[in-house]
Length: 208
Image (cartoon, rainbow, N blue to C red; front, side, top):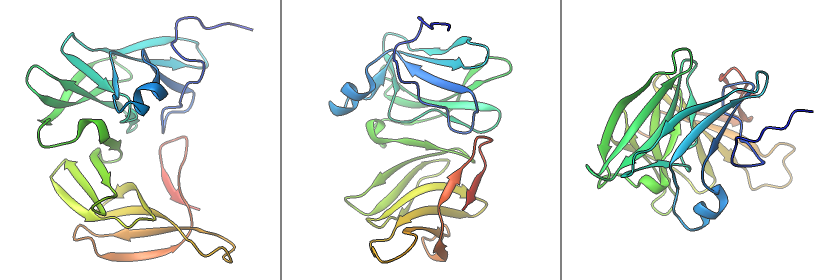
């Protein structure tokens, strides 16, 4: 059995939407999250079949990589977040799998968005924060707006003009307690029903 020695952790999270691909950071994920310091300096990919390790990004001295915003794959590029402390900007970065090219896709002011609480979603690429205190999904990219978010709801993805949320049903007598809610850009519910929003290995979302 082959032993892999060039990674940082014994548990490797799978990259959502990428079969056989896993990611790792050069920091202790759980310790850093508990201290509200979601910062890493290096992001790597590991391919389980070829056993290859790819360095996606190494942050400069004045940069940190978010390990709260899980890297997301849209079928072509891997997206991740970097905070550049020199210019106080949050950088949305991408890594093209085929060419290994890294590029900056967008940037927003770190004063206008909570870097430590931001999450990435695809597809399309969305940068957002679930603000449970104010019961809102705060979306910062590709445009700034908010959608209502109830206590038992969690944002999953956007498809076309609609936003999909999973919902936990409190009624213990129900045979299935996972539901879905579909909202438009105004926050109005256009559809809801019983079912789990599931993301498959090819990256596609389905309700099962």
